[in-house]
Length: 306
Length: 223
Image (tube, rainbow over the protein chains, first blue to last red):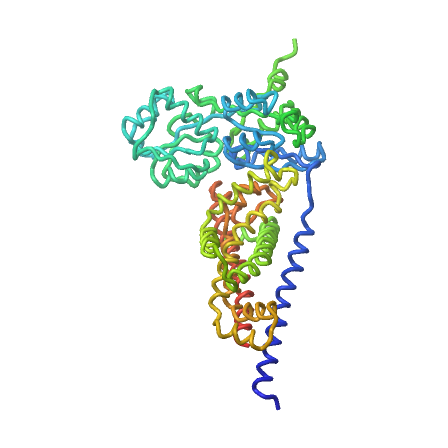
């Protein structure tokens, strides 16, 4: 027969051992987890790019061929163009694929890359509520459409995230001599998909790249394409053209980058073979390409031999 | 609903769940190993500047994860002081960020739990001739329910966190994509069904982990 005190003591030991056991198990689990961390680097290419190239599915379609070619893995960091360039500026990516021409030139002027190569282009479209309160459907240019939206103080959803699309939007406002402000102008600080979703809910106008619009329009019942035509060939405004460029981060400024893989990537991306794949991407799903090849080598290959 | 069910069969789902548990588990462990002893110490001893340390710890509980993420990003960046480690855009960077977020929660709540233990218990243990370590351990055992709650709170805080892991992990497919960043990605792409399915998975995973932790706490309390 145990005394109450002894029974208490036994229970206490039991708790103590269980508590200690839990801590030991936890430590072992942590050690196992830490051991599983494999440091990677030489076989990896870090590509900082915009959400549009990734969300559209383009990269998933073309990258496996490159990974095979260079026997490396491509880590895609899909963020806004502003953040992608900043990642490159800090040497945290080996190559950047973005769509903000002026910002890219600045990137080179700051010596983070030696050269920029045209890769592809597509175009922006202006979408808005089916009711079109600012009557922009009849306009022929984004400048006029934006001026009409501002005059009507119709809701406009802006990316507001320093992305390539926002940069293009700002250039259009500037061309119309407007500084958008007021309750009707909603700067969201979000990606293209989220911005389209907000525009759909709030019956607002917005500027979108055609690819994201095509990929998402089924989920945006309140929005219509109001300026930009059914395809890039029908887009009446050249100012809505959206150019993508690629730059390998300069190893002289950022010694930590995988310059060899970056060089190979740029070469491969602008090659006529890859450009042909880019041109075909989206045809089956959307009946039109999402990106149009634009590299110098592609253009040269298209000129009939004399 | 049927669409939701098909989403659960995606092959990458298992990998995303596994990485989520690995990152959050490791971060929680680091935070526990560091936070419980430090929290216990702060709860047991009295020293100058204790109020300030307490304030810092409590403020740390409210630190926005994105700020922690930015701090870790700048530290681990090639241009940063710890760039040579090559941890940026790897699960290790995510573990570091989450451990920093979890630490004030574990340490602060452990401190409260330990400080809440009856003074009489402590004096009694001392009177029984226990060494300093033995008495600290006994007090920690007395506070075990509160300590478990601290770990549960930290777990909930980091498994649902998205800003920091997105920034330092880069949301790389097959490498650093966890449940929360995947949910953000699929929402952005308008894949609401898949995002919702992942949200359900996240809740299920958190529920399962909490069941484990609470069973443990319940057992400890009953005995």
